[in-house]
Image (cartoon, rainbow over all chains, first blue to last red; front, side, top):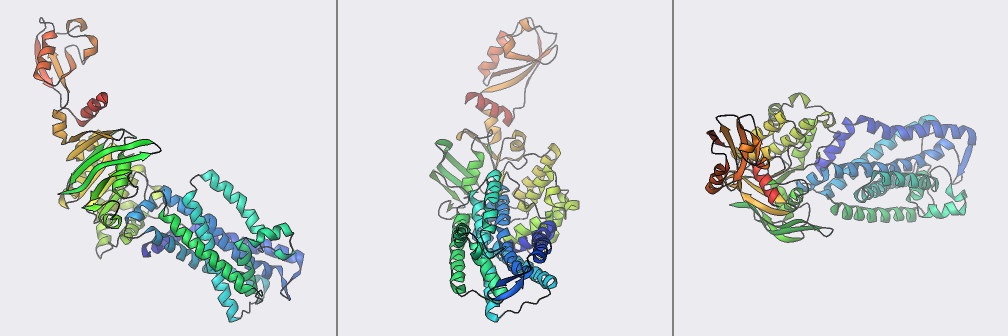
Length: 251
Length: 303
């Protein structure tokens, strides 16, 4: 697994444009989208707290950062399969399970790096420093980790089973908008149409954004433990499914 | 001692037999080549023997380990150069080599100087820090080869190792591969449809067509067993087609010389000579040097 972690870090350094783009997309979202909406919407109410749209939207964006890993891991796993890298790793002293967990660990580390940058930018743009209770800090970090596990694993499973590029493109197109809009990423999904709320109930991004927002604004939802348990259960299931899939990958 | 053994190995894909009852025995330190046209089952054989693909039936052992039961033990002792790139497109040449060394736990104190020396001998020293995406097809193959040459694997599987490499690049690879195998007592199983490559490298060869073994043995013996022989007959005077043999039997090289295929026996040669116009005087008869390509063509015509 050490070799895989080393490779992921080297690839990130040598392929700096890809790394920068992973940071730039959410930064642009925050700088352009959130600031424009903040000047139009005024303040929003969240858990009895009046917040501007930048502070309201930023935690949704943290959740979105984890969601972006879905497409990223999907693509990288497909490349490793096509180039024969997976076959070489299988024949080495490492293993495909090591490959899975090595890549995941690096992505968890990178998720935290991205969030540090985004939190700093949110503080600059909103002028408010987040005051988080210790339990909120723990929930924030655990949610971020679980979100990374969920979307990374889903992308990996997709990359293992879906070979064709055109199917991948269609899939990305079909799921990106429903997943992001039928969640609490941009707005309070409880105020949305009941049809959207039903979709949001089964959408992991809803829980990820709820928990990140609640902990970032120091207003955890009353059922935060259940939401956390749901994410933890889903993460365990997807980790299991990810290991199962990678062991059965056609090399 | 046989380090690779197969017994009635079969592979079936969607009702089509890719390999039919393959029996193979490769000795330690040997370079063994599986020759055959595209789709003959060469890569399938390699994938099964490297434990990347299960066989439909039959058994095989690598260094005495069973390919189904002892996958991990086999994988620790083998190395594969697949047809695909098998290099990380986002890493530099030296980082790709480092990654494989780390994967296999073979990073030693002297690894870096060894790697640089090898890149030098493969004329890749100036490409050390370049991304592998910037390499030509031949350079790409040489980086893959460098990865193999740096490994400690006892058995190396090469799936068409010089595919897409130019002539000088090929001979450069052959010149490195053969001494490396012999000096370090490594065993190589390679597949190719390049007869010159098989000729340059192989201790023994096997010809397969449509998954079936047609011939196996030492190259010089296989050439002797050819059912036809090629003769070049030079006459003292210019010849006309009608005075020699029927048109389909020979190929005219120049005014006085013809090339002719004849059954590989004394009787065949005598019979051919008796049919040539007795008024023509023969200056010289040469037996052409037969190659594995001739053996391949001979087998293909029969199959």
